Length: 510
Image (tube, rainbow, N blue to C red; front, side, top):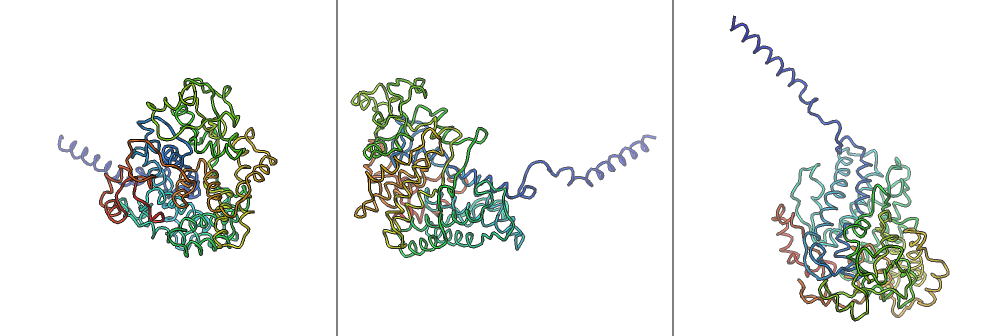
């Protein structure tokens, strides 16, 4: 009797096992969590676009390196203020862009190209442009980076990508952008669900050509012939025509501006406008100073920095000098007769970098100024003075997009241009000084163009204990995660590029 019971029990267990195994794949397939296979790739593109907004490394490093914003504090905030290596921060761009943008663009491109002839070619070419923009920022910040094998963790299971030289990367980026712009077609399926231009192909083309112009101008000192040809191709293809064409990441109460979060939360009382930047605007009676700056006159502590006590009067703005820490800045405070270092001028974080403020990546203003330099070089047949005036005007008009209360009147813009006229004998410096201002809150581009052009003519940071023997930082260092996980490929890159430190120059800055 026991044997019969045991046999029946064993048969029941076997039937249960086979029954479970028969439905194993179905039961263990996650139909809820999104993957690149069950999500419309337009949403992956939107996620990539949103994440092209800059990480906080631009505040600690890029904007400090071009002497626009600085902090006297150390620890986590160590960076451009002391010209010291802080890999907790230098990896911010790397991690953000590779894990968010390049992963998504790589998945989209892999998915669409796997179809052979994709039925959504416009989506493919939009993605290629976003990816090219992001790779440009990455290679400008770090030098040699993973490029051809990057973003292929899902499609080709490449988790430790090799590094490529910046020279090769730039050559391919130019090719990619040209092909993507040429491939965009209003006759193909529309992609109205994307968040940048709502599927407007003409605006995507103008953005792509403006990116191409930026790529070309980056090469002025290392490959003038390629720079000239690239600039001409961009110009002939059609560039941004107004602020309506700007590449801008919009923010709201749900998706907030990262810089706004940073400068309105834990670091609200720690960052100040550099005297170099404040004085440049003040000395030329630039109306943007009133839009951008806010000083809490007489503040002796962070809690006293409230909007009601803030002054936007240009005559009252006092920028913080470079080269001081929170132990030595007191000497400057006393010399200037300030109440404390909280009394220095800040960027207006209640308006210009409020948490819902837009973040501009490529603008009409920047495009016009780059084109003005190209015209001075004789690469395009356009009046550089008109381009210069339009570039300055466009950036001043952009202030209203941050907050209507800091909008600049047309009469004030015209008065500034009359008081500070275009100088053909000093055009390259004048144009690039304005580009520096136009790139405010776009640290990576300001840092890159400063290295390329040499303008503005900044004095080196005098802080006594620096990690560099050169006058300026030339690149950011690779993240610790790469040192630990992808060291073999990283070491190969370092062997050909130069030491992984803040002094080594990127290829186009030789």
